[in-house]
Image (cartoon, rainbow, N blue to C red; front, side, top):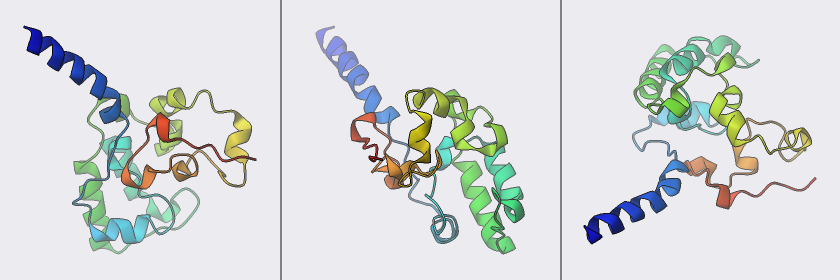
Length: 152
């Protein structure tokens, strides 16, 4: 019984560590990094629902104000991978308005203490620029202990 309690306590203490890590699965197609990360962070697919990724990949001609069209093979390969690795936890799997991570309920809740002026700083630019504050974002690290909000 004592070992069970110790194991339970250890698992509870470790939960925040796991919750703050949303890695990009290692089997990401090369086209994902080459195409998507050439303009922005290669967002971990687990931050959006399957439907959000399908919507995004189906509308690359008007990708948040930019033509991000791809050849059919790359588009199919990336779409399949994103959908396969999309959010499975309820927290992330709810449909995000306008297919934007920054408009999802979990994102808004996690960032409710961030003042509006922070998003407008030249070093941040927008809520979509995760790497401005989350130094480990490229590897899927979003732990609050590793946040460094850039000065004005």
